[in-house]
Length: 417
Ligand code: PLP
Image (cartoon, rainbow, N blue to C red; front, side, top):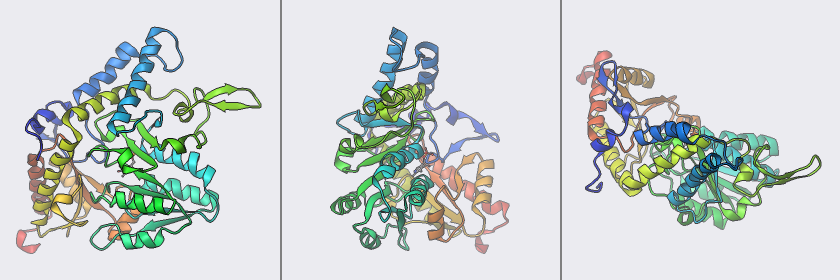
């Protein structure tokens, strides 16, 4: 259970957007897997940065520039602490999870993979963890394979075992499905992959914001996530790389600040992480991200996990009570992650989303950038609700009441369903 001092109603008060109305109704925001709302502290940190601290970083020697650089580097240290990385030198700032994964494909994959090698992903993956590998496979003649899911929406571990051949050089897997809220057995996957001498990239876009992360314990080789999904500003992503691998990787983009010396015939690179951060980075948003990390640390990530577990179990239970709804995934109350996908048995997901939207309830509908997963589920689209620290069981109740409105609009009397 959440700690005694955790009160989602108090948390909500920190989020100005959550007090606005939609169509004259209170906003019920259940789309945090897409992006989270921002607390006042983060909004203020961003505007204060521009008011008081703005100067380009890693360049100027005057105090304002040095202070801006310190704010940027301070966030790097906080990110390292947040994911329990012993060093911050292997924390690279990017624009988002997508860019972090592309960086690995470009800087590690292009250098180390050759024709005949294989990359193993899973049917859970977001397009961000498919498309870069597809592009690389076309460029290098590498084979891209995917582990299927079982009928009840779990990762098929027998298939994983079969597909993990000696040719597999990289396993790229999500820690938590953005569609089904399922956690593949990450520790087992990493152990098996390492025994096979394959590296492991973990897409942490939906796990790092929602539960404690310990990269050393996880023992992955790459971890990618986005600030905007954890109360931070848009335009900031993180890539953590195992230190031994980092120095072997080529730069991602070329330009200012990622070099040590430049002559027309020889260029030497800066040390990591700057080697991977060409040009002026998104330093203002990175500075404000530090306040989001403080906010989450103050709540405690175990508390975040427990709170969402309670909400997800409650929402799942209420959805399963309804004969008009199909829920996707294993449907295990206390294992459900912070996202739940479902469909109305008669009404299309887009209509469900639109009607709920008119009621002030924001959920996501569509393929959720996971078309292979939609294919595995044999549906073109699902509706998804997802939670964060500011959600309450009242939000779930409002959502469930909204579903009755859907039935009403479509003239579906209970007996007809
Ligand atoms: N991976 C997963 C599991 C996601 O849910 C998302 C976004 O929803 C991404 C990757 C891509 O994140 P971004 O759009 O911040 O790059």
